[in-house]
Length: 121
Length: 188
Image (cartoon, rainbow over all chains, first blue to last red; front, side, top):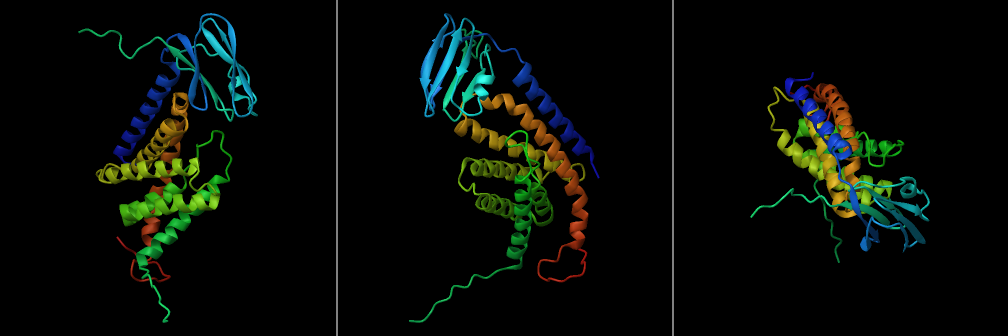
């Protein structure tokens, strides 16, 4: 019932899944240095992860409190019912993100890594 | 004033597509009732019907069945034109596009399982692409990408095996396009 090409497709599919898993979960992501905070899709704060502070962002359900510490950030409190973004805890890597839905507030960490190591002219 | 009638001629092919689309819609509804650990991960049982139609009646019929399935599924589940509907439509479109190319793979080496796995990957890729640009712009989707891809691989393979098993029986049981009769009528 299965033909040679089928096994090829299955092997290619498995390799794709493995590559995606490595890329999404295990590939080294640089340290984060900036926290981007969005409300309703618009960037409301862009804060360097240098000194401790707490930011309060207003969403449709109420205020979301975001705590910044050197090198990391987290959503401290949020009125969304399921509290998923709060339970994510501290974010420290570039690319990490916590979405508070339905309060429409998101916290995303950015690193210094640019797509190029160096550009030579 | 004379009453005017508009009569739409219904061909045997229309009836066949309607019957198969109804089957696909039924599977979609049954599947919607299944609990899923991650939203968006489903076995995609309706794709079994789409693949069978593709292999038996060609791409046009498969596109009709798939499109009707998405539309009627949206109406019956109450998600018509909601985000979930558009995700479903995007997945169906990419899946059909890949199937249009993949069905030209040499049948000697590639069976229904290949088509099913490729279609499943295309389905999830289309959905995630739409989700990434429209619903969740940013990188949140990336972390879940391997989970979706693994689901596509597993369910695509299982559906492909089901299609490979059903296809010979369907060839025996299906009525010929122009004559409807109850007995089995073997067609090549």
